Image (cartoon, rainbow, N blue to C red):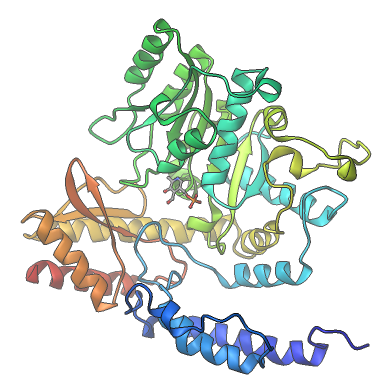
Length: 465
Ligand SMILES: Cc1ncc(COP(=O)(O)O)c(C=O)c1O
């Protein structure tokens, strides 16, 4: 039967060519500079302004993909991509993503695709076990941690204010987080009408952990001033130094003060799955919600953010609204994910996570993560022994923060040299008012030799800076 789409033969041919390209790309990824050598606007200038009027053969599109798009790609899958939190699309993750695009289902309601909904519940149940969380946590997948945290704070606001759903915004609510929390927390507060001035950034101790005593004090002062404390967000694996807030102590304060406790373990959740790191999430079993991103350090292609909530009824209170065309028969086993989130529809993200979790299994995942942490510690030890470098924070996970002893300019020059060399990509941050460079290890294809190569590039740049 003739249709407008490719026939099976065309799909086989182009699909096989694309998969061959992917295999070759990943096999030879070390040949690419991690960062593109381009200026802002280069790609825009290289592409036609006029929208296509007539179609073109896919070979022509593919040729431009290689000639124009690829040189503008920042290779997140490169084993020496150490900026931000490095990520990786593992083979099983890529296959899962491909199948999900092919099925193209929408997991908004149980009846819109039972497999998408039920597999999501199953893999989130598995991940809950890997994280050591109790069964009471309902799990679902969002695109990003920013979205997950926004839903957590939205549910917290609904819990604090039963009239909110019908009456609208309620003034006086105050949210607490550490001064090292990710900006997504504050952004969620902005988007939900809490307001940035009602976000208290609680100071940290000498190890960059939120101070529960100062949290308690801030809550008391806000109450005395007639405001309404409603939520605290702690972090397990801060973006700046991978520090771990004292979750159990913060939970104690949250319990006493009736605050919703959300844990941002977007990056650190992966490290916390290791037996020796169970302490990182001790107390999380009593928290209200938690986010952990498989697209950060669990070898799953972006996007995939795992969100757990112990009070899903509050997600429903905040986010459910069923138009008549989507009404369906109630069945306790038919979960409608749209009732727990802003978005109606969703991709079949559980499929790639299922491939990754099943293929590697808990033991191998832990072995890889353990290796990353060991390499980060090894790297930090070499830096500490180098006369021109100093390590800026203890290494608990796979993030090394360091600086040049000669000051901020020298640290910036060092980063620039390494990044321009194309050998590795580091990111920067300001810590305690001083410039630091960050190296995150988290890619499944990173080998010890890659870390050695990065170290050589850093060492050389430090000596020249
Ligand atoms: C601790 C932490 N939370 C949240 C985020 C936001 O992640 P996403 O891009 O998934 O929204 C990040 C990003 O690096 C992060 O480090």
